[in-house]
Length: 253
Image (cartoon, rainbow, N blue to C red; front, side, top):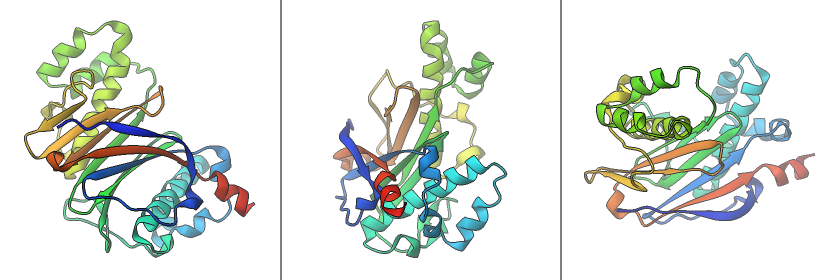
C-alpha cells in the first residue's frame, strides 16, 4: 500500500462548509492557521458547548484559551458539514480506548495542534485515525531526547545522519510515533522506544502488517506531521486542504 497525499490549492473559508461528502476509501485532512485575527472572531465561542467552554476557561494564558476555542470551533464546523447538522449540536463522548468520538454519525476524526497550527483528520466510521503535528524548532538536548524515544534500529539510523538533518528527522520520527500511539489510544501509557516506525525518508508509507498504515507529510516547511490509519489496504486517497476563518471574520465583523 502506498498512500499519496494530494494537496488542494487555495484556502477554503470554514463558513463555506455546509455540505461535505467522504467515500469509505478516503481520508480528508484539514490544515488551519490560527492567527491573532482568528482568535478574536466574534461568534466562534458560541459554537462550543458548556463543557468545552468550561475547559477552555481553565487555561491560564489568553493565547492558549483563544487557540482552544478556534480548534474546537473548526472541528465542529467541519464535522457538522459532513453530518449535515448544526455544529453546536454535535455530541462527543469518550470511547473505551480513551479517544473522543461522535456520539452519533458515520465519520471518525482525530485532531492535533502545535503552536498556531491545527490539523484535523476525517474519515468514515469504522476506520481509526491518529494524527500529529509538531512545530520544528531547535532542541537543547536533541541527542538525549532522540535516544529516549528511538528503538535500537532507529537510533543507529539517526546517529548516522548528517548533523543538519538530525533536528528535522527527530520531529518527523516523533510525529510518526505520536500518530501511531493516538491511533490505538495508548498515548503515554506505551513507551515511544517500544514502537519502531522508521523515518519518513525510508518509505512514503509503512504498513504494520494489515492493521495500520503510516504516512508523513509537511504542509509548511517548519512543521512535521504524520497520519496513522487502520485498514490501509482499503485506502484509495488522502487529501489535504487548507481552511481558514477568513470569510467568517468578514461576515461577523
